[in-house]
Amino acid sequence: MIPQLALVPGEPAGIGPELCLRLIQQPRTDCRLLAFADPDTLRAAAAALALPLQLLPEDAIAREPGDLPLCEVRNTTPSRFGEPDPANAGAVIGALLQAGQACLDGRLDGVVTGPVHKAVINQGGIAYSGTTELLAGQAGVEVVMMLANDIVRVALATTHLPLRAVADAITAEGLTATLHTVHAALRREFGIATPRIAVLGLNPHAGEDGHLGREELDLIIPLLDRLRAQGMDLVGPLPADTAFLPARLTGFDTVLAMYHDQGLPVLKYSGFEQAVNITLGLPYPRVAVDHGTALELAGRGIADPSSLLAATSLCARLARQRKLVP
Image (tube, rainbow, N blue to C red; front, top):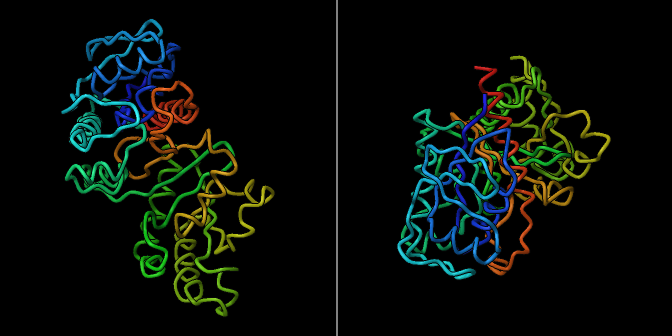
């Protein structure tokens, strides 16, 4: 089975379109791609980079370098490299939602997304906190954000919150749902029969027996004990400052961090170029690049496509695995 994946470049003025063009310069045997994008933006990127591009009908099969089946999502105004226009916010969101709906309808098997400029989308009059939240709302499910590279997988109990709001956002109900989602995704999408999950503490030294905070004693430890009794293999709560030591990571299938900057700096330091962003809990696999729009690099031909290449390969693998594990 060759998965058919949606490819959404993201912000048209950023590096997403040119990364997509670099992606299609080699024929793929692991998946077929259908882009949801503005054709003029793709042609402009191809001209700037002197790369071949042949836009094909949606149902066509790419056979040569530069072939790209396309579902047209037209921008409102022409895009300029490095100059995002809020008028095109609707096209960016429309492309993402059309790609997601194609997966919900069973026409496609997964979604690969480029970087989106959050501020520009909001300036365009569309309330947007991230593609993870957008696709979760469309599907009507609760999701978990995971970032991964070849060294470590890090899932997040909370995502884009001010630090002073994190402690209140860590609840027994929310943490239970998160761990169930991560556990199920590791089994279904990654093919890990008995996942072992390391859970970080919220406080320094995982609370130091209550001397540095009681969240571990009052909430996290009792919750982990209950889930262990249900059959989950959970380790922790662990102090974040030692959980990522290489010798320890070999014993875990993923690490659950309590907040964004507790786990992601380590992951990005260990291999930023190959890191990807995975949305767990959707009815289909969605994998994104782990970097921003890099407006200052757009159109210059120097952006590194490694994250998009890794995202596409992983999305194809997850889509195949989903077919094996209903």
